[in-house]
Amino acid sequence: MMTTAKICGLSTPETLDAAIAGGASHVGFVFFAPSPRNLSRDRAAQLAARVPGHVARVGVMVNPDDALVEQAIAAGQLEVLQLHDTPPARAAAIKARSGLAIWAAVAVRTRADLALAETFGGVADRILYDAKTPPGAALPGGMGVRFDWHLLDGFRHPLPWALSGGLDPLNVAEAVAVTRATLVDVSSGVESAPGIKDATKIRAFLEVVRDL
Image (tube, rainbow, N blue to C red; front, top):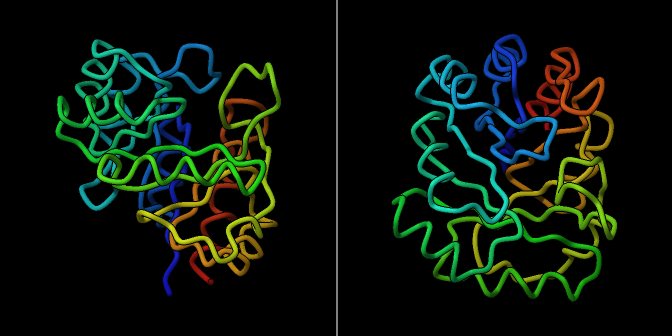
């Protein structure tokens, strides 16, 4: 079983290059104004131009309107749209309009939360299990919060899936051992401060994943 990694919330050429050189299968660009990782169209275009063809560009959005989706796709040369807090019907509409692969984020705190994954059958191409952030949190993810990975024990996944939420170089090996995830997604776990990626941490994370 091979595990690959997405480095999310990249915003500088140096950290993007570290992710690519380290073997990331996906790189994530955030298009959500409240996030410290939010990209302007110009910055997204500059970064996208550095990504080789074997690495997939993922646009991360929170229940976006059509205008934002179109702007993000054009700027980021996106191949995948990762949607947070987006109802299945809206995700289906975005998929139909864009023609791109859809990853639907499912926020998890309890086993009951996993039921939401079923509602994306026939809509999403992948489920991203992420930790549910505290009530009133400004962001739906990227806050270093993790959930109990054992909640996935015995769960019949309706779609291909990825694991996110509080991963870092020190715990990703355990996370994969517990969940058998074949794709892991990290953001705050490879940062020196909110929104500031650390190339050394990115390399460390990818080295662990590569050795799994």
